[in-house]
Length: 323
Image 1 (cartoon, helix red, strand yellow):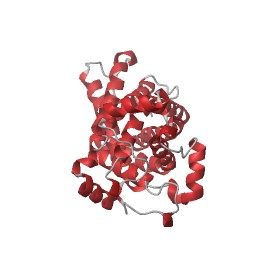
Image 2: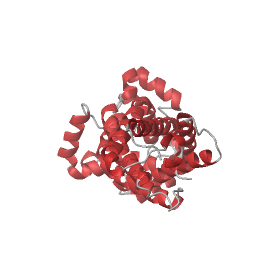
Image 3: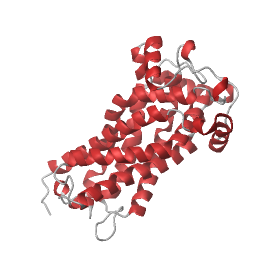
Image 4: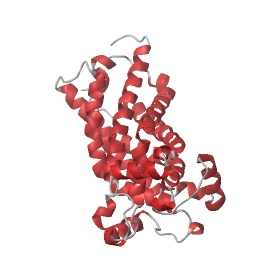
């Protein structure tokens, strides 16, 4: 059953007319979701850096969980510290989602994710979603590096991981370029591309597939908002199980900086995975899974629902004859 066949999308689409708007809509969806989920991203970053390359019994626990971290950060650095890194996070949200969701939606309206009968092909959807994830990862990596380092910076009493002191996003960009060069903005890019290729394939494919399954059985046909919400909740669970280890690696590689900042702890993705597992155990690879889920689940839900609704509004605003 084709995605564009259902009642609320029964419109003839001319792909070239909507290409630019596809990317803008995807970006706006990411920005809107980021504003609400950034505090969980701050907590997630701190938990993933806590006890870096130390056994659980060998380090002081600054944060004992999600709610304790929220309380400690707000008490020590002020409530606004929970929105640390919001500016680069919004740039990241726009950049990554404009590319990722824009590319995937372009593939959908061009029929690249479907067979000749207009039905969703899982293999094609995975390929398109994975490709869009890789491209978005490269595009958003500089903002990710700046965001992570700003979010990690804290009062010495609650600081974890290497501390980088930037006076905002612009200062962070200038400082990284001066001390690490252009390469500094692409720290951890291999892990980013791997995470987003897998995560995007899981997220967008699960989202599209679950919507198709519900619609094929006659559920929520006349309730596109509820349909998008239910499908996004399901794909959020799938994504978190797959992405967490690579997300931990991302955080560590983003934050370590160059040799000028101190000894380089990791030489790459594999080295990082190996060291975390050897020293911190499987637990280390799933550090921050709670706040990561509480960030990804609503972020996934908000961005996909906003994306779906904006696309529907755009399409319905065009007076194109119904098929």
